[in-house]
Length: 108
Length: 119
Image 1 (cartoon, helix red, strand yellow):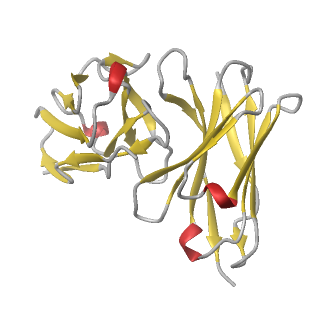
Image 2: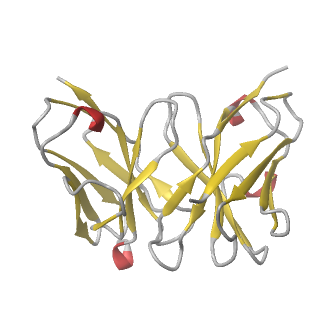
């Protein structure tokens, strides 16, 4: 299985800040098949970014993704109140598809 | 707008079989993979497996011996069965659509259903 390691596990930031969450895969994820999801309490995950850097339709442009190989990142610029949530990376290059352990983003 | 809705018992006894259904509306099931993912209380996400519209399946090896998925395209439904459940199977179970050929992501999700394993 490909292990996905996110950092940090939790993060405190203020409205207007820019933050970056990283995700490292235990082996190369070809075709950059990395997705990023946002999850709020009691809700299903929502896809933000697919294939590492493509913005899902309807997602604000303050969300961006980057990376290739084994190292990937999600950046949120100019944090809004509604962005405080938990974020997960996922690889869909090979089964079993695996998720990072999550990054909890909270308001400072 | 594609919508998914999970249904089934919220309480299952240990050693019994967990059975869930996911109803899909607002779009065709053809050409997509349909997945089950679970989330134990306060924990992360675990992919259980997926099924294509043809019925072809792929399961997570961690659960493979206990999991069966099926699809009924005439009813726009997929189902999940997990046998011999224990407390470790207590989780919120989500069905989702995977757009394998375009994005590789799970783009539509159900709201999730909490299944508790307890006597």
